[in-house]
Figure 1 (cartoon, each protein chain N blue to C red):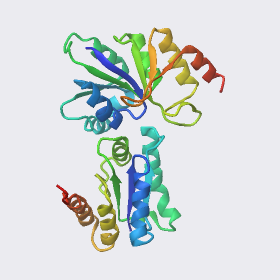
Figure 2: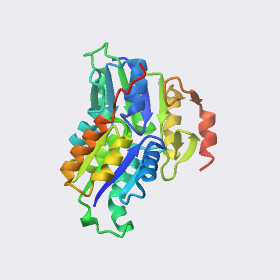
Figure 3: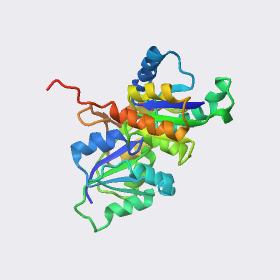
Figure 4: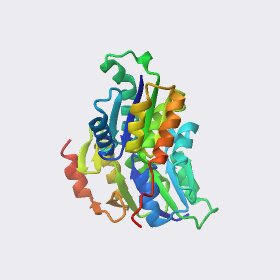
Length: 137
Length: 165
């Protein structure tokens, strides 16, 4: 399974995951984390903990994880810096900034159908395409 | 170089610094004094990459950071100085840097820490360092972001906080 963790300021990530599941139903392997009240070191440690723990909690085998998407809200903030520090340049992890709802819906829709690299490219593209000057001016 | 903000913040270089304070103060350089990060090229690269392109960045061990501020080069450079702890800031002040006020920007909850302000959690070591900073003539102003409420910390508050341990 390809897993995803949404790491954001405040409750943004929790709401994005909640709304994704409201639209598509429960999504195993999709979780959120907030930086609220945490130092850079704490966020980094909790990310590592999530990576180490969840497959077992899900009853899965850690070796069955085929890749991990880390979706963060804003590049350069504590969430993205901590994600980079937690994972270094691990080829099985993709850290993507600018998370939006379209990216999460795309992730759930495509994650079982392609390989990890392809999924990463599609999620990034979907996120960009979702920003549209709709009208009103 | 003039230090336009000397900030204690355990998130180090992050949005409140690179966007919040930098938009307000327009520093020429962000100087992070941190021994562990300065010793690790990967961490240095990650933190340095988050600074806006029009702002220079230096990540140096504490002792070298103090020296770099006193260097005659770049005398007019306006510096935003950062440490991750009160202790490191007290060490910089002890070595000697041209500042009068310390911004206590963010110390988050951790084992053995207690709340002093909603964005300032401290242990005994932090309180000792705060007291030392005051003894060395610094003003301690706790303020998370520009325009946010400013709380001045004095010896009496530090003493009272110390009684909670």
